[in-house]
Amino acid sequence: MTGSLHGYTRITIGLIAANFIVFILQLSIDGFSELVALTPSLAVSGYYWQFFTYMFAHGSISHIGLNMLGLFIFGGVMERVLGERKYITLYILSGLGSSFLHMALTGISDIPMLGASGAVFGILAAYAYRFPKNTVWVFPGIPVPAAILVVFFVFFEFFSGLFGLQPGIANFGHLGGILVSLALMFFWQKRSRGGSSENSVEFIWESW
Image (cartoon, rainbow, N blue to C red; front, side):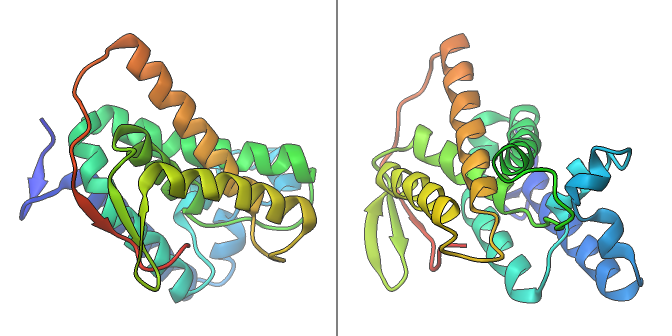
């Protein structure tokens, strides 16, 4: 069983805390953002830690706020469902998949990439895989089945990345997090089938 903190789950709380700590360090230390962000040309040349650290770094308070909101909403549920080990594996591998697909489709550039979005999209995709019919409330108050929302994001992120509809947003990275998550959930389901979806309601106010 997962541990809990005031009814919530400790890995999710720890991940949120780690993201905010890194963000505070970014604001406090000159050059820290450049060190922890993923710059593809540097990462493949020896700065290998950036593949990991970038998913804990953010570019603004709204950036980290939206990502941590998504993690707070869906993370605790998936931590309880998967257990701590699989949950942290899901988070990290979704983040890595995000960076790899981004680089594969956009090239080894000098443009930094940072943010937990790929990992959080992976958590959302896992939630939709496990609870496809559960309701997610999308801003400004539209109820959408979780599976439909993720299918929408797959197409939205692909075409946004393909046609450059959101400059400065790593859409292919978001897509990578989703795809890795779904592959992991499928693999784990094949290894151990168990449990059935429950009807419940989760809230998300904005697509991050």
